Amino acid sequence: MVTMPVGVIVERREIDNPWQKWRWRPVAVLTGEAPAAAGTALEHGPSFDRFFGGTLALELHRKETEAYKRNLSNAPPSLYVALRADSACPGELAYRPVAVTASPYVAEDLLDGDDIVEALPMPDVLVAWTQAFIDRHHVDEPFVKRKRKGGSATGKAGRGSRSAPGTHRP
Image (cartoon, rainbow, N blue to C red; front, side, top):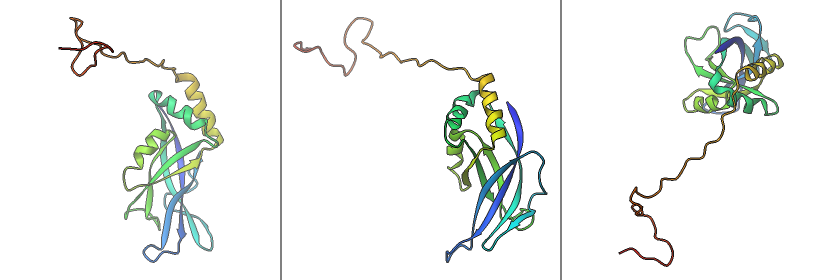
């Protein structure tokens, strides 16, 4: 396993909904040094605010290289970020980043809960880093077809099997 820290930018956008005033979602992933402390406002627009949500560790695992290959074959490759509601978030944040992955299969699993999960474009530096990891660790596993179970050792047909055409079983 290898890791790389990534920062998550979270957006709060005003929406026209009688039950909910804001829509929260991750909008960007940054590499390198964190631009600010978690919860710091970064940008303000007429109907949105963007905050630095925090830093997470992007992990790559040897057993997941097939998933990473599939992801990199997409145009564009994605990072999947999950946000979770948290009343203890710093500043004006109501959601905090809780997971980031390059595996579309892990992202599917993240959708099972109440978290907000979004696919974001993967920065070029992370595409290169992920490809280098795949090149170093990927092993193609050959397809092995399962063999059908035949009849019993005595040669009699198994339970529920059919006789050959033109024959009958007593």
